[in-house]
Amino acid sequence: MQARPSPSSRFQVLEIAVQAIAVLRPVVATVRRCDRDLGEQVRRAASSVALNIAEGNCNEGGLRLSRFSTAAGSNAEVRAALQVAIAWGYVEASDVEEAEQLLDRVAAMLHRLGARR
View 1 (cartoon, helix red, strand yellow):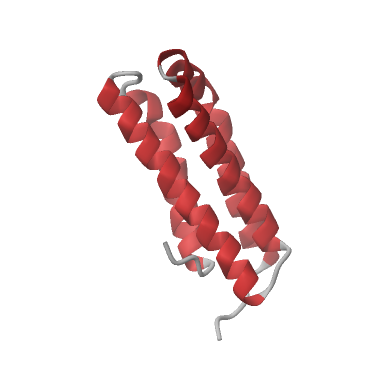
View 2 (cartoon, rainbow, N blue to C red; view 1 turned 120 degrees about the horizontal axis):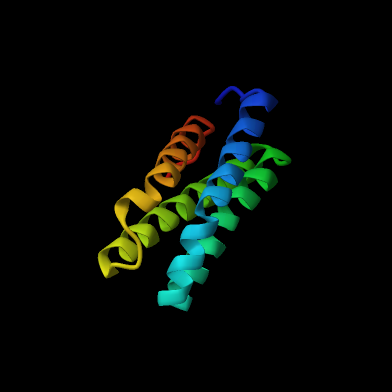
């Protein structure tokens, strides 16, 4: 059985996920102007990361791991959507660099919390 992470480490991952949302806000606005559906998908997936982390923090056992795994999946979805937006030319790679770094940290922290995605 895995040791339960300290509450402070779980709170930190939530703060970083919310910080990524703040960084992504202008990127999402730009993407939405070019492709409304893709912009909404980035917005929903980024929100899902933070919301599932928060929900996982209040659960135990398998449900906790399930929420963290869902957050990790949504995190991967955000990253894929950003790559699609770059490929379509809606944004430049430099526009999403800071968000990518934050999402990398979220992914690593979720992995340490037991997420399996």
